[in-house]
Length: 209
Image (tube, rainbow, N blue to C red; front, side):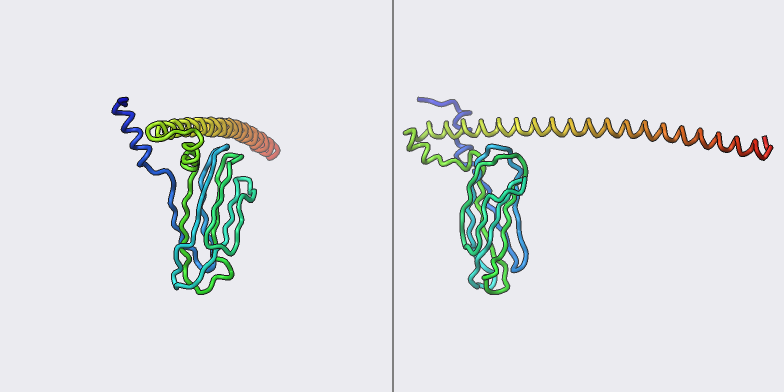
């Protein structure tokens, strides 16, 4: 079976391209470091984190807290050196993961933490899919490509909806500014008229006109 060249290129790009974000954080003894990502609703998020090293070579543990855009607690661990959190987003917005050095950590050096953050198609367990559906090789890569296309389509729809929301907000703001300008102009005209009337009455009383 022969595949078109463009399909082979797409399969190679999918199989070799980045599927996740590797993040490195230098966490001070006192302080918090956070990472966030804007994600739309109904997206799978999977992340692994591990303490890689400590600046002064002492034993280190960290605390981790992950919250949704509405402040809901999705993951909270303390006194750990590694861990994992996974969830499916229920609302669109910025999801925040904060890390800080645990109080039990010895020494004063920085703690280096590595985070393997995956979302959407990158968080899917393709090995389980392959075993369940008994597919492999090119067929599995085609399934990955199909999933990637669906993810891109969903992202485009999300961006389109955000654009519509921003356009609606912009139009509403412009309308309010226009009405405010008209009201300001009307108030200026009324105030100017009252000033002219007052000055005219004043000069008439003084018999200057």
